[in-house]
Image (cartoon, rainbow, N blue to C red; front, side):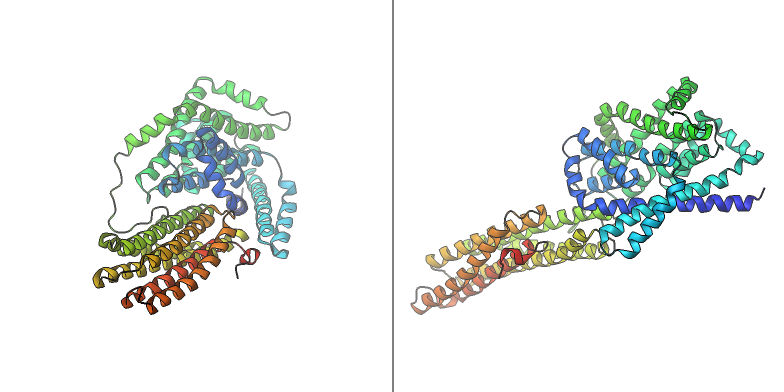
Amino acid sequence: MNYTEMILGMAAGLGLFLYGMELMSKGMEKVAGSKMKSVLEMCTRNRFVGVIVGILFTAVIQSSSVTTSMVVSFVNSGLMTLTQAVGPILGANIGTTITGQLVSFDLAAIAPVFIFTGVILILFFKKRIIKYIGEILLGFGVLFFGISTMSGAMGELKKSNEIMDVIKALNNPFFAVLTGFGITAIIQSSSATVGIIITMAAAGVITELSMVFFMVLGCNIGSCVTALIVSLSGKKEAKRTALIHLYVNIFGSIVIAIILLICGDKIAELMKATVSGGTPEHIMSRAVANAHTIFKVFQVIIMYPFAKPIVKLTQLTIRGEDKKAEGFQLKYISQEQMSTPSASLIEVVNEIKRMGKMAADNLQTAFDGMIEKDQAKIDSVYQVEDEVDFLSAEITKYLVKLNQHEFPVKEQKNIAGYFHVVNDLERISDHAENIADAGRSRIEEDIIFSQVGVDELSDMFDKVMTTVNYSIETFTEQTESHLKEIVDLEKQVDVLEKELQHNHVRRLATNECQAKSTIYSDLVSNLERVSDHATNIAFAIYDEDQYNLD
């Protein structure tokens, strides 16, 4: 027997299999990425909805590791609570079994069709969505071509008495669990490990279902490694989320292992009975896939009622709260570890939303402080401005990193708009600082505005603040409901800017206000510029021409 040729064949097949899974998963993620926000919103409704979302999302992207890592990232950034995270984690355990079901069917014969179609779509079509579908098809074909290559090489394993003796030694449940755990922890994909086991069963290398059951349980526990690694750089809540995944799989696997030790042979016969006809190898491979799915469903059913105790256990395992970091900090974005690109976009939008509220509140504080001659309010404006500058710099750096990934066309366009939004929010806060400077001048130089001037300025400011708030809502919620109002308000502010400047000059000429109140003119100009920046924010991801902005 040529061991070198056999090992190279298995390695090549495994490489193609893993690459096909990665290609298919990434393609699915790119296509589904634009729906990530709605997926998150559904997860926060209740635990059962979270389970369903976890099943569907994982079935689509073919990776429970991606789902759980995304959930860990969301909890770390405060977008999801620890209790809300339980649902999608449980659902991911079921959704990940879809890959095993696909692998158990002998689709190698049509793999070249998928490969050819995928390549055609990638090379000869310009639309990104078509290219992403091509990646999915190519990945699907490469995955099954890899299985075929592995299966051919594994067929030679049966001729080696030494290798078969090693495989038979795995009849020890402990070693079988350890083997499944070890392989999954290394390649960080339980779907891939189960796929390999199914391929070995189809090749006739594995003939004892009882051994396979325990290897599958080891795979379940090994799948937790990715989320644990992602959580290491996160907050304590992120670590607790990863522990939920670990505890669910450990406790569920223990229960199933006890049942298998008591009546494993009967369960093996039952799993074979779920397959209708075929060769012994086909029955074996389908039985493994069905067992994987049934185990996962059973595990979720028995663990679902214990969601709250599991959450409590993670809190007992990792006690206390995170120490408050000194200085300014990002709240939603994790610089240490980027989650999936599409999930990272949600984090960015929430961080920008936080920055927007900070800039809007700062503008309100600056105006109130200037009108009321309140030194405390004016001083607070400068402190908030420093934090807004920090957020602007950090979000921009993160967007630069994020922009290096591939996204669907709509999301790619949105990212370009995010850069402008961050800049416009930073400029609004700068204008708040200018208004605070005017307030400080009013206090130091005892500048008095006429009541008419104050009323006119307040009326203009109210319209500007409405525009700012509508614009931030338009951007963060991606709704067009206020766009026409924003356009109308912007036009009204432009008219008011000219009227207020004219009225102020008239009051100066008739001595209705102090000569040193010329800062009034600067305030009017600042408010008009704030309105411009707010309008830019609203139309960062929408077409201005549809709303007659000029």
